[in-house]
Image (cartoon, one colour):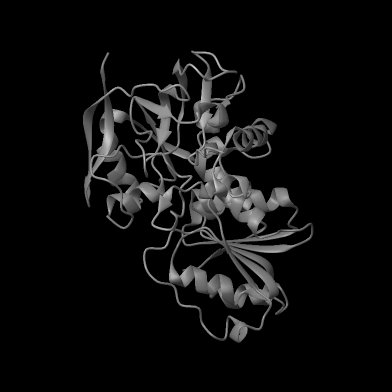
Length: 357
């Protein structure tokens, strides 16, 4: 076989399934046959033209599969082994990696580094919505899937789970903290689970869809608020006795959720922003305490590498949360255009779609 099917970006509003040549394996690479992948909210930003990628690029960055071929330098793995690789697949040789920020494994752009440079699949190199994907720096990025875990159980690890947990980690949640998580899509649900694992004693989940709020209780939320039914800011301040939350996680990428997260934050608290924003943000003077509130606003791009993936799969294997339950729909790769239509328009209670070549 010399060709494969791949979903590629053609133009804003157009992602098409085409035939592409099978990738050629370099000495440090691994060719992985995809068994399951998915569509991310970032892919929808690409589809809409809100995040620029090259025409003809294969989209997708959440691979679960089987090693088809290993480069000559790749040791410690065998062909036929089930693996995942993170959406962020750093080289671990760059300044960013060695400075402790592997997600910013950028290449030179002008006199600096490109932000988000560690995100390569479906961004700067061909991604995972295809029959096969070429994994660069394979020794650093391939993580074996433990026996007994299904594709659906580990499908969240490469990005969604890692990102949600990164939001909780960046929020510096401590045992006994009160945390608010704004938006309970897949990333927000994983941030809720991450807040619970970090030791939060009260987790307040906010969304406008009751079914998502129901799932958030299973992921660790103690209080759920539907913003269509209640003034969320007033209610959170009431719950906290006017003190505000220790940490707020924004997991949608809208001005409204960012501002609400800031307004419920206590002086000295941390706002952890996970959303991908498609327009400028405005910071309201009062909510920001005129810059005198000792607040922290932090952003996160999930770390990558096999050790990160190993830890996340350990959490899945522990059974503390059912991350496979976030997969609500399954489509064949042949039907990925229809899957994009469902996911982009958020119909039929969709959370995550398993795409199977």
